[in-house]
Length: 259
Image 1 (tube, rainbow, N blue to C red):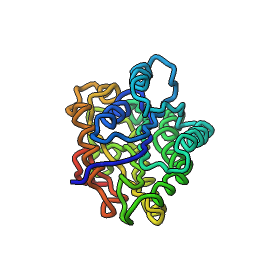
Image 2: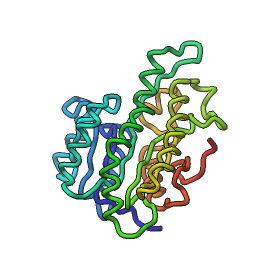
Image 3: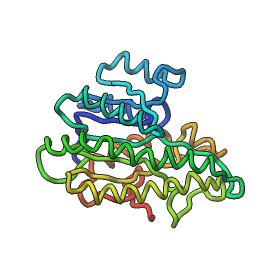
Image 4: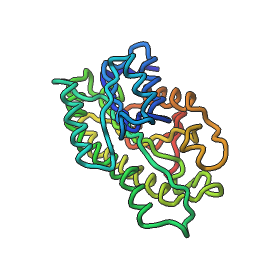
């Protein structure tokens, strides 16, 4: 298996949970990225303290103020990342930021549906658009012609809860707004894979597992997957996927999830 080797990566929602875990694991790689852009809504807030501590010890971590529900914030973040990269591109965009509200179908509201779709689905759409020039630049500047995460890729963190076939944990939590947003994110990932393939950019939807994070625990039962196992598994998957997998819906162990 090839080692994942990226010069630059951007992780959204990087101040806690899976996002922070990804940043920590990128640092532990034999050859860490030269640039780890850690996007978070409130870089100076209490919830970003652990990320701030990491950044103070590792100069390759650049904390980027980023609210994925705000188009202006996304554009500003793309400009800031572009400045840091100089003439080079962004190899890997990981759309991790997401929100969950555990509602029943009867209790679902317009406001919750709009908020969750804006963050979970529209955010990754706008991120892909804003960072496309930097991803294209990375693809053009990388050796070889095949698709890979080491060259240029968009990874959308989805959920098996958005699979229409499996409907994971329905008996535990209906959460229709979350499920619908992730099903839509899966379609977005497929659309991105078709539109961006000609630019040398790989795109997949990736289910991290039901992970032991604040979000994972909000369903009321202990999640079965540790954060460490999830992140290690996902990075192993990212190191091995290629042109065959672009547009796929995979889990943290590399298994294909039914739509």
